Image (cartoon, rainbow, N blue to C red; front, side):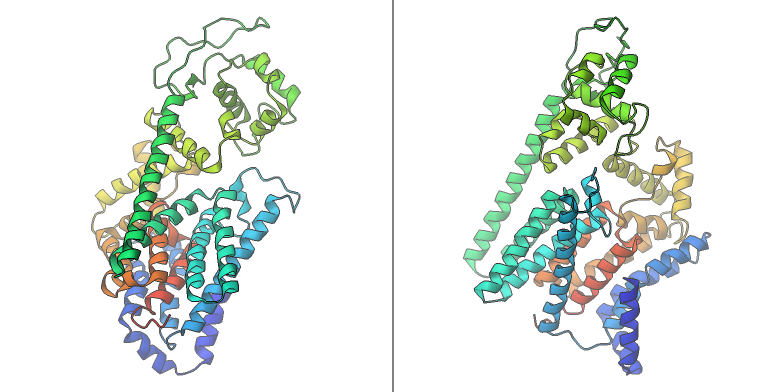
Length: 494
C-alpha cells in the first residue's frame, strides 16, 4: 500500500502541470472537504502532549489528504477506466479468497484453529469488508455488460464471494453485506420511477428484514432455553471415591454452560489425570486457541450435562477431544453452522457480562466496555477532546480510575471510529468528521450513485465496531474509494 501511494506521487510529478493540478485541487470543493478529515487531526496537535503517538498517527493517516490531493489534479476518470479499477480490486479479493481456500483445504500443511487465521494478508475483518464491497462491484458489472458469457462470469465470481463469507466464518463481513444490500434496496425503491421495480425492492427488503428478525429472535429464544438452570444431583464423591468440588451457595447469576453450573461437580484430580491420558496437550497448559485448556475442558464437559470426573473424560469421543484441544468450549458448536455458532457465542458473552463475570478475551463485550470508557473520557473533554496523540494515555488513565476488570493486554482504545474522533478531537472534531463523511451523500446526490452507496454503507457500518481509520489497511481502503467515488459524483459517466 505504501508503494502504491509512492507510485501515485511519482505519476503525479512526472505528469507535470503542477500549478494546474494545485489549482484544480484548490477549486475542487468535494476534494477539499474530504481531505480536511486529515487536517482536523493536524489541528489536534495544538493541545496534545504525546507527540510521538500523534506524529505516528498523522503519518498513518496521510492518505486521507494525499489521495484526494493527487486524484483531484487529474482529469475525470472515464467509465472504461473506472471499470478497470473495479476489476483489479475484484481480482485482488478473488486471489485472496482462493489462497485462503487453498490453506483451508490444507495446502500449506498448517493447522487452522481459528478460521480468522484464513485471512492471510490482513485482518479477517478487513477481508470481510473487502469481499462485501467486491460483491457489489460484481453485481454492478453484471448489470453493465450485455454478453451472456460475461454476465455468467460475474455471477459466478459474485456467488463464490458470497460463499466465502460463510466458508471463512466472516461474521462481520456477512452482517455488513446483508445490511448494505437491504439499504441499497430501500434507496432503489425510493429513487426508481418504475412501480414494478419499486414494489419488488420494497418486497425483498421487507422479507429480508422480517426473515432476519425472526432468525435472530429464534436464536435468542433457543439460547435462553439452553441456559435455563438445570441441576445435577449433589453427590459428594465420584465413582472412584474422590470428592467433588461442591458449593451449595451458588447464585442464579453463576456462570453456566447450557444451563449447567460450570464450577460445580468438579474432581480436579480425576479430570487432570484422565485428560493427560487422552491428549498430548497438558491439562495445565493452553489449548491451540491460546486459552487455558482446563477451562475449555470443564466448559465442554459441563455443556454435555455431565460431572467433571474421570468417567466423563473417558466418554469423550476422539472428535470431542480434538475439539477441546482446538479451543471449542461447547459440544453444540460441533454441529452448528458458523452463523449460529457466532450468535450463540455473542449471547453467551453478553450473559456472562450481564451477570458480572470476566469478559477478558471476549471481543464483542470488550467493545462495549471500550465504548463505556470512551464516553466517560468524552464527557470530561467534551469540546476539543484530549488531542491527537493522547487518546491511549487517556484510556489508560480512565481504566485505572475505574479499576477496570480488563487485564493489561485488553485495555485498548474505542473500536469505534466515531467515538475515536470524539475522544481525540471532542465534539468539534466528531461533527467535522461526520459532516465531511456525510457531505457527498447529502449534498452531492451521492444517494443516486450505486457504487458510492455500496461503499458508503460498508464504510459507515465498519466504523461502528472498528477504528477503521487507525490502521493502514482501513485508511487506504477508505481514502481510495471515498475519493474515487466522491469525485465522480455529478461527473458520472459510468
